[in-house]
Length: 264
Image 1 (cartoon, helix red, strand yellow):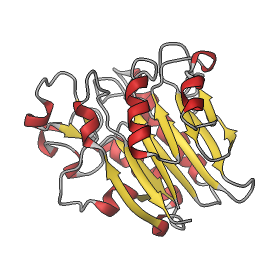
Image 2 (cartoon, rainbow, N blue to C red; image 1 turned 90 degrees about the horizontal axis):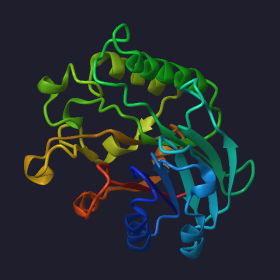
Image 3 (cartoon, one colour; image 1 turned 120 degrees about the vertical axis):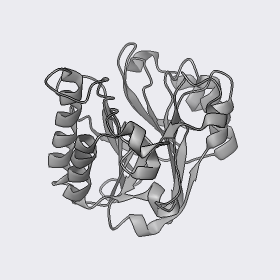
């Protein structure tokens, strides 16, 4: 059995106490963090070492973006894909367990894409679509059971947002983004673990804007964070949990952690 968590922490140094609390309470074997906002040499390695997460793959940069995979289990870093094509730190791929026989785990932070869903007036939106296209080309080559997790910055289904009608023209839920994400999904046959455990008819969110002071009461969320498994791996999932309580902690991330367990 192995448990894997993903969390856009929105600055790992600012919220290190929250990460420590989550790890002590939930004890996942592996935690994938996005938006760590720190270069590798300034990452808080000592804190994770003391908690028993002695294996780490950190791909960071100063002040922005960045991903890190920390683990109690041995891991080997394999890849750092530049799907943004501009040098930003948005992916790290590792193998957890035995070399050549372990689980391939991809940790990704897809760009948000700016405010206007039109690449002609908003280059950031075009970059997001191109990022997804490069991911789809990569997915065509995946030939081992893999798990890709992280902040996809897309809520693909009707009940992944608080109002499908209101958000159809809002970046993260536009048809063009969903079509691009579907191309990535179909390139490998990825299985959306979150929606395997929460029926499509039910609302499911992982992000709530800081702009909404009473986020829990209004519950205007979006499901931007995902854990997708290869078709061979997905049936081995035994549980999937969204840790909503973390959004109520003091100075929280605007995202919550997700945890999936697998019987490998």
